[in-house]
Length: 245
Image 1 (cartoon, rainbow, N blue to C red):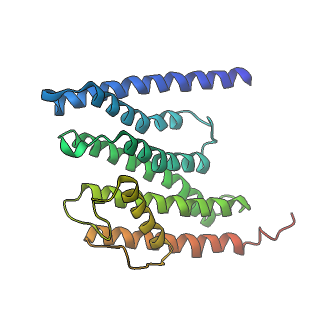
Image 2: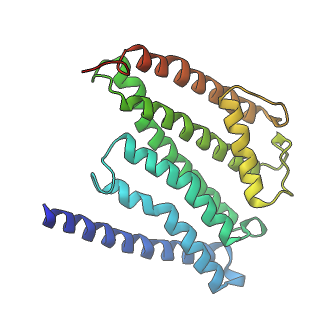
Image 3: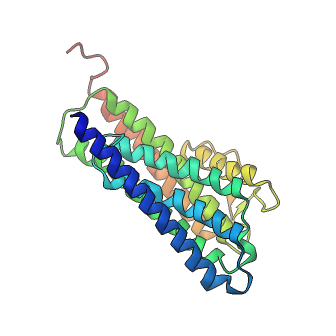
């Protein structure tokens, strides 16, 4: 068993190093394509760090049952990684892609991260919805934790989607959120709006201005209602919390 764990650690470290090499190559190629006339080694290094932290979770996904057991727990961990750690890294680097053509490369990187987020949520939602309704397994008390965690991570995910939508749009997307805000506050404002939306509180201080943003808000509200009213009600109504078995 110990040898198997050593092999897993070795494979993880090897793949992490390979990911670092890929990040360096991607950063160099991107700068050669978009910034050929003004190459800057510091910016190449900063871009490498951003790319590396974006693709590192793919190494974790590749290895089965490493650090986290495959399934909802690993998916939740990866969602929190992408939604919390990666934005913090981006803000701390303070690399202004908007002033150069290199921004298109990071648009693509953000899109890939969003696809991975959707994939992780698909794993959790399959566990929450499909398994419950198709009776593929018995409901256990930990399912309550899964539902609540899914609820929170979906709210954070929509907050990130709102942030990306605002950053990549030429017009103001949300009333009450402007680009002159500090980066951390700008990110937090979108998170704040997402949580008051999924909980259907709606204070009215922030609201969507574009059709796409309004559509996403409707999707988030419906998702929140389904998770809280249907799924959590199904779990609690099953009697597992009061069962003595």
